[in-house]
Structure formats: C-alpha cells, structure tokens
Image (tube, rainbow, N blue to C red; front, top):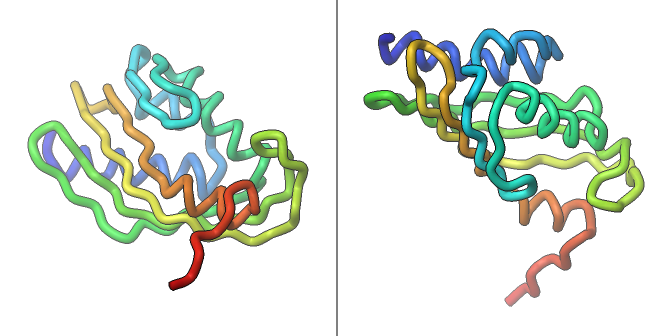
Length: 142
C-alpha cells in the first residue's frame, strides 16, 4: 500500500473510531492478529484487545475527542502526533470520576502490512494524564 493510504488509515483511528465513536471501524483497519504495545496493558494481540484498551479510556473519559496535529510516514510505518481532550467522568485506575478536564499529548506509531495496522505502539503522555488527575504529584517548581 502507498504511504498516503497508510496515513489515511491511521487517521481513521482518531477521526472515525475515537471522534465519531464508530468502534466497528477497528475491525476494518486492524489486522486480526495485530500486536499492541501499551504502557498500561502491556503487549496484546487482536482487534478485541484494542477495543478493550479503548474501553478503559471510554469508561473513564466518555466522548473524549482527539485532534490530529501531524502525520508522518516512511516505509511500513506511520507516526501520528495528536492531542486528547477529555473530561474525567468515570473510574480510572481506581480513581472515581473527578469531573476534571484534561489535555494529553501523544505520539502513536503504527506498522502496516497489507493495508492494515499490523502493530501499534501507544505513547500518550501518561505521566501528564496522571498528574492532571491528581494520581501523581506535579513536579516541584524551580
């Protein structure tokens, strides 16, 4: 597949799956045995595993949105710089809903094979998320 096609498919994750809440699109864009790498859930495989990962965030941050900032592709890889905008309205990591609005930057990496996402690395700024929710202390100001 072409670089532009792979870029468009990666963007579908953010625009259609997250922003339009069309979870069935996951089955179209991910390979059935896709490998997922996530700091919270570890390494897992398949569309169901991605939907479960997404469900963690959907529960804690219902109707969250993402803004795609930049998309870069080379070879079989696509990187997407993006910003999540959400409100903490459900349980997350043992913390009940706080109602806090959060902004989290991220940079995801996708590896493509045969036009589908074959491997996915989630690299959102989880430390910033945890600080904004009060789970981690903010760094001391100098």
